[in-house]
Image 1 (cartoon, rainbow over the protein chains, first blue to last red):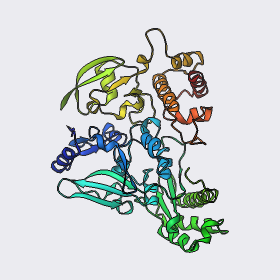
Image 2 (cartoon, rainbow over the protein chains, first blue to last red):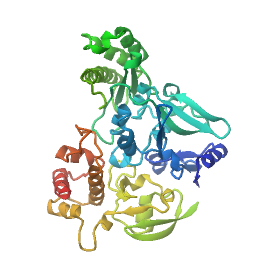
Image 3 (cartoon, helix red, strand yellow):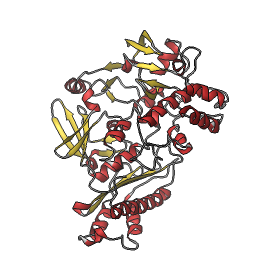
Image 4 (cartoon, one colour):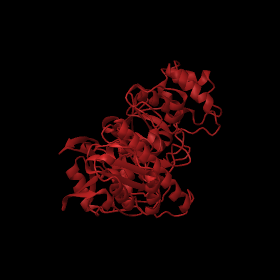
Length: 291
Length: 167
């Protein structure tokens, strides 16, 4: 197995162009599992750790640009207050040891439907910055990034550079179901982000379809029911959260597998959607909403 | 394919040639004879191979040796100053925080790394107040140590040991 160690982003892109079979590796917490168990024998690994700028973040054009190599623990500590939904999800990834190494870029590259970062990225309307030596930079909306189970819109010669998110404009929450808190793959997960200025609510569903996805009908339903200024300053109308939950459950396309049945996943999603909307709304009325 | 790397293990610089597929755990155990990190699951689930890697706790089974050329590694063995045990090690002994002992070096390294994280104010999944410094109650200890399994089930004493070690 060849081991490629670029020292700069430009070098990484050049190596990538020449070796489409190389598997990019950062924290290694996902790629290494497959290598240790010989599920995968890549011809080459492209180690992105020496590319220091990948582990940085910045504010640019009013948005947060989070480098693909920023470990979860630093993300939580350094920018968690600005992206609370993503930070909540990051706090549930693997175990503390995994979070010291794992990255959002790795989660995106692996594109497991159960990846914890996907729902909050979808709910917040994040964009994925990818780049290749020949094609330059592309900005891909999160909802167009996931194409299938472990398949993404990333081209053979491209690498993930960063994710872009606007700092939270309203309350955000993340919820997931598993057999214990640590070291489990989510049975299903859900993220919500209120966008008060646009009078709409963003959603993200995880582990309940071949790809992470938004609950479009549920989002439209809420935008319709909560149209107009006064609705956003009052308590939620009776039954609204329940109906929202049902629509979220319906948006999923889950399967029966060892972790849970499709029917259970739909039910759990409906409950998580109802709860997270209720929490987010309470945050909003209390004027907190950054937890 | 082989690569030459240098690792600083428990204070000593070591140079070795490794196959590029070698994990940090195998390099430590099989190549350098540093056997305090244990191989339990080999896929990041059990935490028994935890060390402090450049100051932070990490599982060595999911790290490639070749990717850590120049890294500083502290294992449970390196935490003690000769016969003088680290307070967390002493607490594990005094509180009987083990039965068979296989997971213990990983537990100890994880606990030491965890206490540093608490000191730095890092919140956990169960931290209620994200603004203030985290208070290390038993629930916090259990959540923060959730990456280390003990198949003997010595958890109550492990929690007690960490409570003592934190003082």
